[in-house]
Image (cartoon, rainbow, N blue to C red; front, side):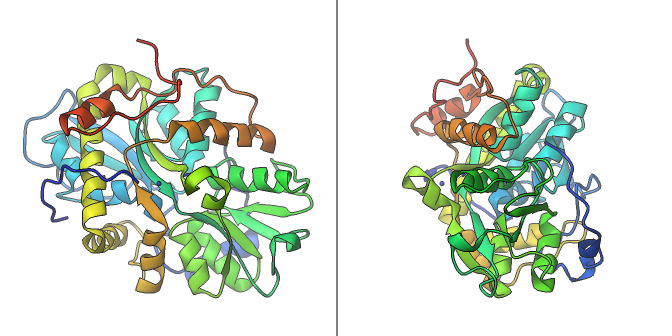
Length: 378
C-alpha cells in the first residue's frame, strides 16, 4: 500500500463453535464466486516485516477475516502496510479465519496473539475464560451487515416463517444478530441446531453465494462483501442491521489481544494499535485507493480473488472505519446473545483496556474514547 503518514483520524461506524456441515452445499464450492475461499487458513503468506528495530518479541501472530469489515487488517498488514510499518523489525505472521469463534479458539490455544474480531465471539471468549483470556484494545469498523434475501421467496420481513437463512458460523456476530432478531419477532428457533420456525444454517462466508444461487438458502445475514455479493446475484437487502441501532452505529469489528501477550509485550500491541489508527485514517482519506489496496490484499490470500466493482463499491460504502470500539453497543450485543440462548448473563467488567489506544489518540491531539464503564481497573 502506498500512503502518506496519515495522522488525522475521522471517527466513523458494528452490531461458540462449529459450522454445521451441509453436504449439498459443499459440492458447490467451485462456484462460490468472489473473494477468498480459504477457511481458517494458517498458511497465509506473511510478507517480510518493515525495516526498523525489533520490539520486545521477534514475531507476533495476528488474525483477521477476509471481509471488508476487516479491511483495516487486510490493508494494514499488506507488505508495506502501516501496521507492518509500525511493527518495525518484528514480523507479523497472519492467520485468516472464516468467523469469530474459530479465532477465539486460536487465541485461547496461543496460536494468535492479537486478532480482529466481531463483538459476540469476544464476549463469549471472555465469559468462557472467566475474564482471563483477552482484552479489547481498539475499534476497527462499524456497520456492514445485512439480511439479504431471494425476492422470489421472501417479499417482506413477515415472510420469514419456514425459510432457510444462513449465517457464517454458530455464535458469530451475525448469527447472534439473526437469532436475537427472530426472537424479538416472535419466532422460535433452537440456537444450537438452528431448527425452528425459521431454519438457521451455519455456512462459511465463501460458500454462501453458491448456496444462494442454487436455491439451498432463501437468504443470509452476513457481513460485507458477502452481502453485496448476494445483491449482485439478484438478492434484495431486506434489513440493514444499522436500522436496529441508535444512529445506525454498532461495533462490527474490534481488536483484541491475549491478556498474557498484552502484559508481556505491550509495546507490540501499541505498535499494532498505532498502525490501526493510521490505517483507518488513510482509508477514510483515500477511499478509492483503499478499495484498490483491499482488493490487492484479498487477491493475495490463498484461494482469493479480487471483487468486481458492483460488489466492492457498495460494500465499502456500507462500512465505516473507526478507532472507537463503541463499547456501549457491546453490552447490547451481549444481551442479544443471552436473548438468543447462546450465552448466560456475563460480567463484562474489565473486558476493555483502552489505555494504549487513548495514549495514541492523545499523541494525535484526538479525543479519548470511552469504555462504557467496562474497562480494566487500574
